[in-house]
Image (cartoon, rainbow, N blue to C red; front, side, top):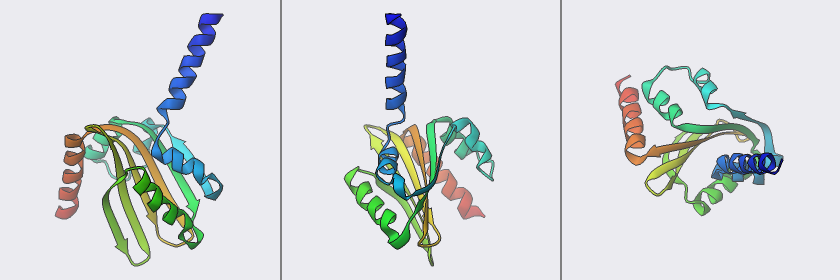
Length: 157
């Protein structure tokens, strides 16, 4: 019985630690502003993509966890809070895009030589903010290859 209890305790500890990400920390701090949140098994994320791209497949194969959240962003309160959070937690901005009121940004977090987390933030109005947190384990070279090949494909269209 002791072995079973110890094994279960260790598994629970690993499960809790496995989902510890900067994005989850941000979500916990702003849970009351969340209108919708869903953890998506990475095996199902290929259904979310409307394009079949090899680069996205490589990224998803390296992913461990994905969480999608829609926040109530009245007065840009959540977005402003996220900017502070990103600076405090060492998130690096990969790209920011602005087109009128539409905005999108991609951030990533490194640990050693690995990219451990990617966060995508997007909104098209001041009321809602959509964020996707993806826990990954990518080398910097793998990440650079994915980003550059995506840029090449978009540029050729």
